[in-house]
Length: 468
Image 1 (cartoon, rainbow, N blue to C red):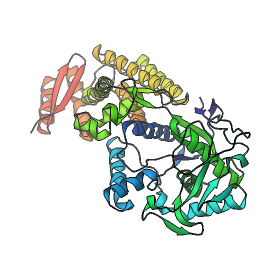
Image 2: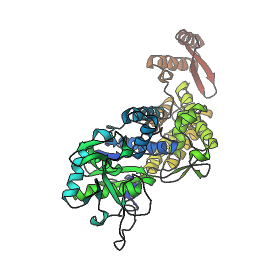
Image 3: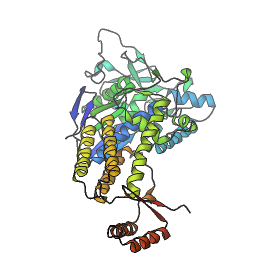
Image 4: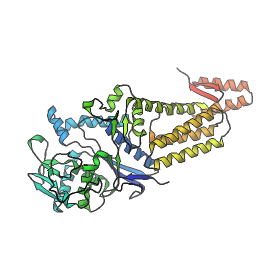
């Protein structure tokens, strides 16, 4: 089954085919570093981590670029209020961003371009827009003329009304339903303090939207495969990116546009004023496991709204523990049953159903249900003594394959016994079947000397490490 993704641009699921297979080039909107990311931001980052991992699962090579917005209205305001330089102010939140990525096991992108390090790229892009007649100067700033781009609104569906006079907007954020000429380059004023660059465009700084156009095309080319972000970015940010980029190149910026839905808390929009605003660190300080947070944030389909509660987080932690307890069980038991052909079919069926779910626009809830059904059926086979070591090896291999996407399993490599110790267990089982108790006891003691305790159960022999 081919991978299908919901494309906001066409409002339909489409079969995904990269422009230059097997390479997939992805641009995702990253953090604006004026505070720690909240769990809504992290949900979006995890959604694209799952996308990235599944593409690699399917054999693609992935090159992901995620920007860091380290100059905008909010970062400048924060730095001025604290009386520190813009770089000093943003550096602490960049550090916090990467700390959160690591705690949640989000794979690092290939490149994290910072806006402040790509000013010249943005200047050159603005110059081209001026030359092509899509931009104009006014009161020291440069604005994009939305009336000149005939496809404006094709992503968001917002219609440009030519009968109305379009006002200019210099601020980075504005009404989500009103079309405005937006700032490409902001002429310096006192509010910006010492944050400015002297360029061919004059003294000033870039607008918010231009950075993503400049950096995505620099690292991924004029056309690339996937552009992803939160639903709140569809308009105006992503709409403006398309207008800027495609006006210059005449080419489609991104083939697919993917958007992650909002996270709400206890049925309400997350807000500091409501006391329902959470960062990852807030949850860790309450004693929650970051892997439980990771599980919760990917367990709802990325295009569905996620209602966060501490009760749901506790359930997510239980789900993570259930998977890890299952892995501990299948890693520490040495079954004595015969090969179970039916269980072999169950494993193949689980792999097929998991991939069908993920191929359907990354349907994680369905994929997770497949995994838990597999766990239930394997546990039953173990309890009934209807499983062999070869069956168990198949299950382990498939679960570890699933974990290349989930990445919620405990990292305890010592639980995998070396082959020579597994061979001793196998020899002891052969001796027991032959009722050669003397050899069986000798092998048991030999394993004990190596720190391995054997427990004989109706389901087979189980091993554990001796506590030193």
